[in-house]
Image 1 (tube, rainbow, N blue to C red):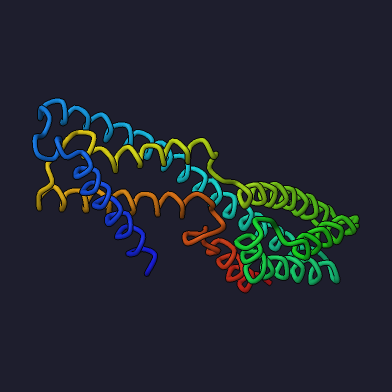
Image 2: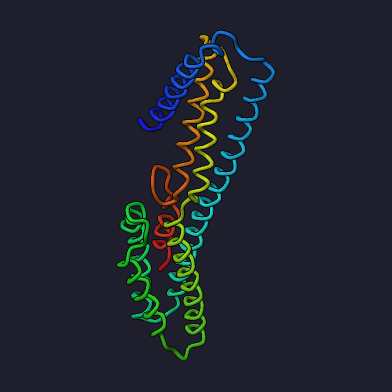
Length: 253
């Protein structure tokens, strides 16, 4: 909450300081503004540049975030498929497979999310549970065709889990390329200096508009940084898909 308010206000203060100090350093411009038309063109060009870069960055960050969420949904659905496939398997495979699926899902929710946030990687203990689960399914042998079909279904679902987990590992390491952040900050600097470059007079109205501009820019930058890493920071991908899977397990015998 403090960050939500503090960052935009800090950028607003910086924007006002840049505007007032910059205008006073250009004393002639401050007293005798340049032609209004040329100043307006300068402001429009800089604003357009910033909006284009910011929009491009937001689209990329949101796409990364959305893809990461979709990977968690795919993984959790496949876990439910494995749990359901074990329903038709004989003991002790039936209970053992379902126990391992629950253990894996609980480990993802309770431990792995924190590891991804802190270390930007997956948890090795959670991977070990998944490996044990696969070995347990592979060990199921039966002449019953129904059991064989469920074993095949479980293995196919585990392949989907492994693929989604691999995608989640990549998502945890993913971040926006540095050159895009460079372009974004270049646009921000230009925007903060735009009023000075355009020769806008210092007045109560122009200072207020500059402060509002700083708040908007600060809020946009904060949103971009929070969306940049799907599993780290202040806006991480939700664990709802796995929590829903745990609830579904309780309905399957």
